[in-house]
Image (cartoon, rainbow, N blue to C red):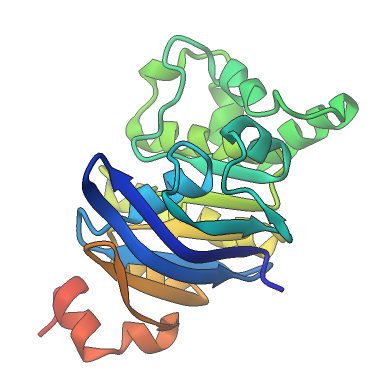
Length: 237
């Protein structure tokens, strides 16, 4: 049984159908990439999985439990974290306050400090700036904060939406190194990313979306060498 199972999912914005009956799986320990052009439906899928949007039909199952109609805050407490597009840090709060917000659903209060230490170990820059107001951080530092905040919930799976958006090449490399580390530490990752080459380079498997449909799927290494993928998403002819 897969950790996360999406079956026949349909999502609408009013009368506009954004997701058209897709199905896919995410197995424990995998990095799964969703790639595709803007408007393909990638963010909509993540928002529906995490309860921010409602599915019209289909089902979402997490560790054997149907979560299709479960509110987002309950989904977080079940072990799912979401790093949203655009970071969405609490700009008027400090770095430390943002991180503590990530642990608000946890009941193991004595272990939160240990998680904080592990986040600081992974993101030394956050520890250096823990008392700094988050809105004054650079884009790359805010992305690290958004990822650290998600990790504070001690998730079994983390959903990341466009983590490299708007970042300098140096920060992009750093962020993808961290995603790889997160995966290697045992957290499953579902990654939405415009930088298809980077996403496929760290993913185990990938799904290619076009206008709400999955049009291609397979091992990430195979897709990285697929001529149609190279032409459409990797800037190669």
